[in-house]
Amino acid sequence: MSKTTLANMLKWIEQPFQTTVSRERDLLVTQANKIRRMFYDMYREFEMEVDVQECFRVQSYGHCSGCPDDARGFTLPPYMQNVEAAWLSSEPLLLYSKWREYKVGRKPSSDALMAVYDMPGSFPTERDLCPFGCLHSVQFMAKCPSDAGKKVKVEFKSTDGREEEYVELVRSGYTKMSKGVYEINAVVLPTDLKGGVVIAQSDDSDKLRILSEYQPWEHVPSYRRVKVTGAQCDEAVVVTASRQYTDLYYDDDIVETDNRIAIENAARFLFYSESGTGQDLMQKAAFHLEIAKDALRGMNSRDIGVGKEGDLAPSQPARRSRLHRNRRSHTIR
Image (tube, rainbow, N blue to C red; front, side, top):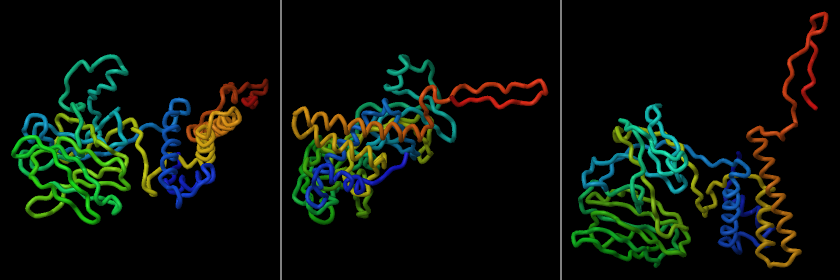
């Protein structure tokens, strides 16, 4: 399936929503994400692409029992929902997954030296403070200057136990937290961000180590982690996971399809369905929704080679004449 960028998608839906990017970009971004969510929810009907595969380097976590080497694994990015399969050095790993156990109705019956587990809970950063158990300096940076003055709430553990602090973002550069941090427990972002926010660790050398890059639509960032037994740090794990829907914001963000007909007609469906409840508006909305669905259906038929049942008859074996010459069988009705 071919893809496009959010910038292109915004241009395509200007006319259906009767506005322009230069005048109301935030409105068009909101509507573009509604269209993407609509397509995402149709994946069962149209067999759209719902899986994603990536390679991760195994890292060490210290959250479980206080031992830095207690758990090794990786953090799922926001666009990955549930691990469906994993390989280490081309060898498949036994998968212990709440999602998989729910689907198959049973748990794996035996332990394995190398397996994948969901780690309990959720985590506010993609990477932990390192080394574990030490005080660290933590800083925040706004990626958009217009977010200067907005405050990020941080819940953390310090020398005085569990605390919270509001960190004010500045127009340029990082803002350092006033206290040293043992562990970050939660991060709460402003709801009206125009750009992303970066959280980083900086210690004596002032060399920054990025912990996470938050997106403007995130409010309480939360990541899932996966434990890999029997793996060593920096080993590569290939993971196939179901795709998690996430909003887009930046012009160069990737949109899952470049089907302009489907996108434009989905935009007209939203425009008419949100303009009122009159019968004429509802009929127009339904009309454009069907065009969008037909465009998606045709696109997926071309992508996966699906034809309508009965288009082609089953192949018949060639018959032989009395002169033992093959006759061509007619397979197309």
